[in-house]
Image (cartoon, rainbow, N blue to C red; front, side, top):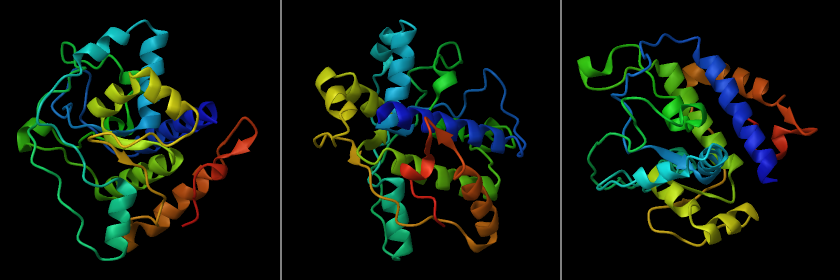
Length: 235
């Protein structure tokens, strides 16, 4: 099942990368202003990165993953959606600082090929250093949220949190073995259990476009199985 989920993960990445080409971006190789230690991922994305490093003999890069006072989320994307749908004020994240991603090497990403969605979806229509933050088209921001919800649903028995915590967790052989058996790992500081999809966070003006995207995604198949068998796509 994990192998199938990884194939669906790659398919969603590929779909998103192609879709995002419809939006302008000024990001170029070596542009790393947005590459910080506050990247949030699922355990499925973490396994994808871990296997990539292992297959290329680069597990030593995990030794670089040390930082302090980084973002540890108080809710998952689907928890946030639940709060918003039911008009409940979500809890705030603890304060944190912004520092460069520990993976960065000479301004470049050594895991770029398998970078998680949080990195994959962060690019800007204007130079970030000019305004201090990325400028992303409002529609793409909505689509980004939809995909983070889908990825959490895909990794339904896994965890969500900062990439530093997720990769450190999976680097432990016992933790990895439990996860690969499809079981929900025990509570780990900094990590949250993934939650089921309660509905999508989508403003009315983007509804038709999101419905179109979900319909296209619903046709994705791997190993003779449809993606609907892993995630809920009904809008």
